[in-house]
Amino acid sequence: MTDRETLAVYDAKIDDYRKVFTSHKSRHLTQFIDAMPPGGRVLDLGCGPGNAAAVMAQAGLQTDAWDASAAMAKAAACFDGVNAAQRDFDALPDEPTYHGIYANFSLLHATRDDGMRHMRTIHTALHPGGVFHIGMKVGTGSKRDALGRFYTYYTVPELRGFLTDLGFDITWEKQGEEPGLAGPVEPFVLMQGCKPNA
Image (cartoon, rainbow, N blue to C red; front, side):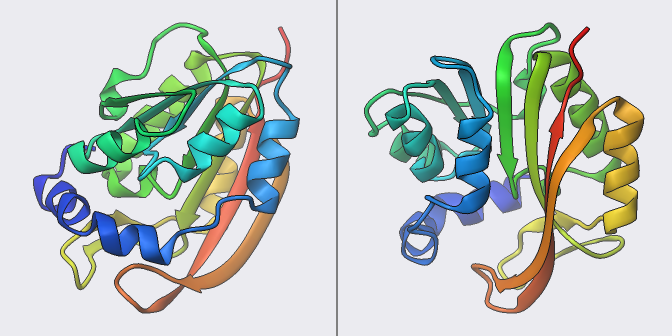
């Protein structure tokens, strides 16, 4: 994700972001961690201030945390056991590297074409049996929010179909609504997919 306006918002709003999103010991994060092999290598892709990555590291996982926002990557680097870096989605490896990739409301900042391209690379970057967690806002089209952040929206069948076409077995799904940093309550979907063993 290289949209400069979006990155500028995250750099400027990091303190507000921390206040709004403080708890990351959620059911879906616990499920993701529980699906990892002991000491497995994971990537928190679009890690924000690093709260979820910190929980992964505390669970004994080798934890990489990337964010294209310099302020977010710097914050994530403060947690013990978190290997944080300022990197965008294009830095994803093109060979099996991770046992799990956690992209919780990050890929929605890519354009549709780029987002689908990144998801293909994520499939490649996972070891056989690897797990992909994705969180997206539900809807159609793309737009900027009141803060100026760029979003691409997906319908649930669209996202489910694309992950299935890539070769993921969808093992868990949740839909709901919640307010974001910009304020309005919006629908979302969480999915966890598994790359089949070869």
